[in-house]
Image 1 (cartoon, helix red, strand yellow):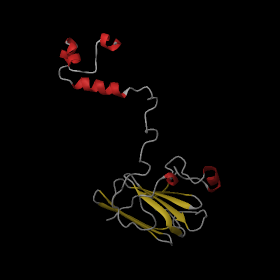
Image 2 (cartoon, rainbow, N blue to C red):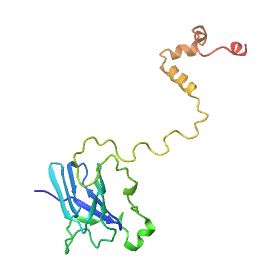
Image 3 (tube, rainbow, N blue to C red):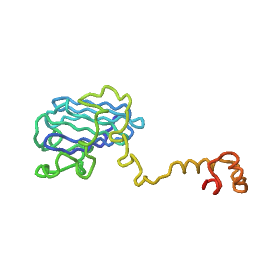
Length: 208
């Protein structure tokens, strides 16, 4: 028997944010139709999970986009017409138990202009890079995930600050010294390094 994953939602006048709380989901299949039909199926720990909803109004399938992550499945569904939906699904009456309001992303209609299109308090879907992931209403196959969006490099890690006085040759020399098995002999017989042509020299030679 299939189960329903927890599905959280929030909206703006032009889009709907859906987040399916299903970590480590396998065999994920998504389908979105222009009339507002939304279908999801996935497997987790040997159990089947299914979502089958009639959304409140028509949607723009081509402009909608999704990403399957390790902890959840995120979908931005673009509305066919910009307006505020009174609810997520067409069905009136009691809301299904698995359907929850995503309060991290929710704003009231009269507050939308104050926060813009983002998702206050939570992940801003508009800032995510969906280019490597699914677009539109179908999911032809997962293939290679490529990498999580925005993970090309951590901000500020291009180089360590205040590295101008860093003496790289000195570090290399010290590393070479650490690898020498005869370190004690070098301390007792520094003149051996001079004979072997190493980097150290006597004070008299340095003055010359």
